[in-house]
Image (cartoon, rainbow over the protein chains, first blue to last red):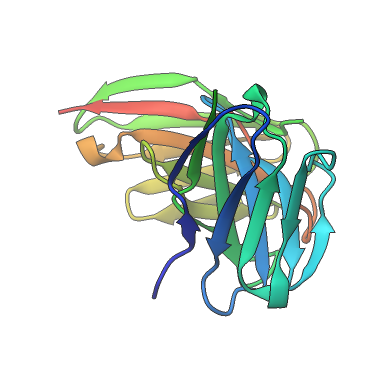
Length: 113
Length: 111
């Protein structure tokens, strides 16, 4: 069974530039999560989807971050414009349902210069 | 805000020794989970313990939960170099609530 796929694995951009991350969850998983993980810290939830619906986006900085999950499968997380403080690893995870075990992708390491 | 806090922040042991990591949390929970993260990789779910359970085992892993003290411990027996990783506890307040991760414990197992 294929795991959660994320791309790109690494991204280096200059501040004020836009950036997008893509996630393909495990087939059949209805719940999809985007996390941000700063160095030496645990992941922090940005947004959670149940199928196409964003059910928890309280931690998403909506002035510059946006996310979508078209057709309830793949998801894209966008930052525009990026700031220096956005440098982090962005993790995508999926689960059958919110109560089930989450499976994480390898993450995208973003460096904003 | 972080619900769980792991202790110690870093731990270094010799291969074959046991490693114990602790997690304390602040509010009541539905369940507590432990994850492992190898350097540069995503997180891997290790074990989930529900609030009405006191102890769970999975291979060389043993997790305990004391809801009266709001704490949990993860014991890795007979450690191996491959156990070198960061270990995170994560709490869930209610059945459909989000998972909140602690800052993690960095474990180094020296061959």
